[in-house]
Image (tube, rainbow, N blue to C red; front, side, top):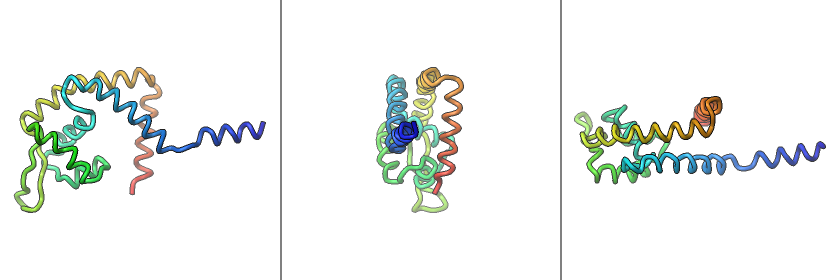
Length: 149
């Protein structure tokens, strides 16, 4: 019996990173399928949302909020800029710094994608259950807090 419990414990520990990445990919697929009608990915929707909330945010500060490398963020911003959804403007106080803003088209795209995002959110909540979803979100918030650099 003791060996069976130890084997079960070893079996359930495994690589946390792999589990998180797999779960993240599955969840992202659900959101991306829903957001496809709005012409954005869940990553793009999140970036638009943060820029909407923190208008004039710098790339470095936004990357920090998203827990993302600034180079990766810049690469993800490029298609949004090409589509005219995000504008990069020089900071009036520091000509070297650049600030991010949603364009009018960006505000409209973000608003139009909201219902698709909400459908995906409901799908996740239904799949996980009304007790599990808040518990998962609380656990993830604790993980982010405990693993902060």
